[in-house]
Structures are given as C-alpha cells and as structure tokens.
Length: 337
Image (tube, rainbow, N blue to C red; front, side, top):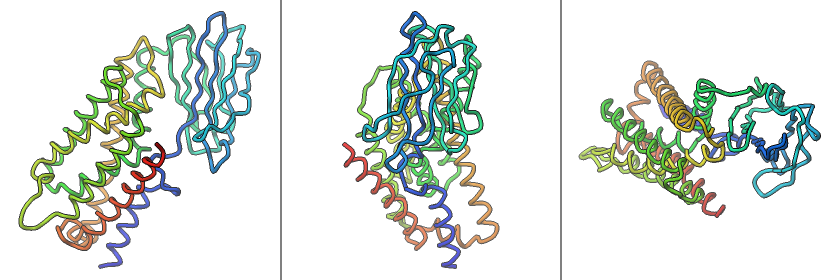
C-alpha cells in the first residue's frame, strides 16, 4: 500500500516538475521586427539561456534583407538579446523567416512583425514548423488560430498555474463544487487578463509571480489542515478563494500576452482567443488528472481513498510536496527582485 502511494506521488511530481524545477518551462525565443517605414525594420532577437549559454538557434530573415542573419547576442542576466537595423528592399510580405536550429530543441519562438508601422502580427514557430512565409495580412481567422495556440501553450507550460489547479482538485471532493470553483477561477483571471493587457490596470510582474506562489502555499496549508469533523472556509466556499486568487493569476497570464503583443487591428479577437486557449489548456489538464484518478481508482481504490481522507498520510505528503514546490518558487522569485 505504501509503495503504491509513493509511486502515485512520484508520478504526479514528475508530471509537474521539469528537470531543473523552474516555475515555468523553458522560456520561448522571441523575434520582433518593428517597421520604421521606407522598407526598414528594427529587429530584436532574444535567445533563451541554457546553463549560461545561448540556445543554439539563430534567426534568419528574408534573403533580400541587407543583414538576414541575426548578430551574436549578449547575456543580460536572464536571456541573450540583440537588436539591429535591417533594410529589406523587397519588403517582408511573401518572404520567408526561419529559425535555424529550432527543429533540434523543445521550445518555440514567437515572431512579432509589422508590415507597416503600428500594425503588428504574431506567428508562433515550433520545432515541427520552424519557418513561415510572411502573409500579406494574417486575417481574423489567422489571429484566432495563432493566439488560441499561444494561450494553450502558455498554460500547459505554466507549472505554477497548473499546480494551483491541481491543489484545488485535491481540496474539493464534490463534483458541482469543483465545477463552480473552476468557473470562478476562469471568470476572475479573464477579468484581470483583459484589464491588464488593455492597459486599464498596471501591476509589476515579479511581485505578482511571488504572490501566485503564495497562493499555492495557502492551498497546500488548507489541504494539510483538513479535518473529518468539519470543513474549513476554503472547503465551504472554494469559489471565493478561487476567484480571489484567480485575479492574481490573470495578471500572470497578462504578462505573457503583453510580451507577445496584440495585433492592433484585431485586439478583441486576439484577447478572446488567447483566453480561450488558456481555458482549453486548463480543461485538458483537469481532464488528464481526473482520468488518472479514475484509472488508479479502478486498479487501486485504496490509494485514492488514502489521498482524499483528511488527516491521512497520503493527504499530508501531497500537501508537503505542493507546499515545498511553492515555497521554492516563492523564495526564488523574491530573490529575483
């Protein structure tokens, strides 16, 4: 019994923790081409850091540009950025942009470009699709497709957000309460995501990330202190807790979207599709956890019973695992101030 319980804990931990236990998966590369008019662009290329060295990827602009290959970047403490001016006599529309070496990585690259000043579009490149032809116009459906994928990728790579949702799943045993709690979390982070992205509210990113870690620590404490003889406030009114902390998580989602940028002609579509992508990724994670729970329940029901019982060893161990990870992230983020 103890061996099975330990195995399940290790399985969940492995699914939640990457090899180096960062708060998020490896940050994506970023290429921005800001139009200066007269067929000239300011190019900004940011390469993720891998153990003190730039990831072995390189941006290649259309061949008609006077400097198609990105210069070597310099380390700024978190990544490897470089900025240069480029002139493309034939423009960018209909031309190819490629990220050399991306096919040998596990990350992606966000490309934000302007065909004319102030009208940006975004394209996501992956190891399976590391080159694209710049379209004359992305269009509404193109914006919907790109930002839906960006939202899904962001939530599935956000281990702290997923751990918060996982803690809610452990804390709440009732199906309808779980639905209401997830809905409250969704509504709350949708509000702050929109408000922050549209510039209505400005909140500094690092403190928000630290408080997000604190929200996970709070849920870990609530899981640990559950009692058989009565429900705690977080169990009686979980949607209130989910809504309050969902507002904070929305600011975290907004930070990623602000870095990506929004197409000026399709801001509502991009914002909506990014948020839908976040929800899609969140529902995929919840479904995966529930399917795993059902599978274990079918094979070893005593394991699920041990994890769900207040004051049990399994309940205590899971709360320590969740709280320990959240504490690590909190200290790491405070130190990063």
